[in-house]
Image (tube, rainbow, N blue to C red; front, top):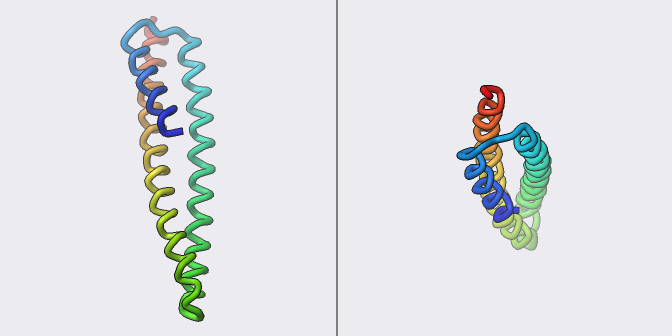
Length: 108
């Protein structure tokens, strides 16, 4: 997903420099909605990982065997947060590009 989103942003940024049609704006809007869903799913998954990590952390105080899954979950949380951060910033970048494209189409 990361590479796909990076490539799509590059493609749309080059499109903005040229002639923009109403169909281009609508396509970008559809893609933004798809990326918003992806972002929401990653937020939900991240929150569940945090919840499970907290549960395992509490269980670590009862039994040290739970330390291993807790560490694994902590590592996974870091990567989920990094990916979510990328998704959030990329979608916000697409919002700005959408505004530029929309203003170009409206001004015609």
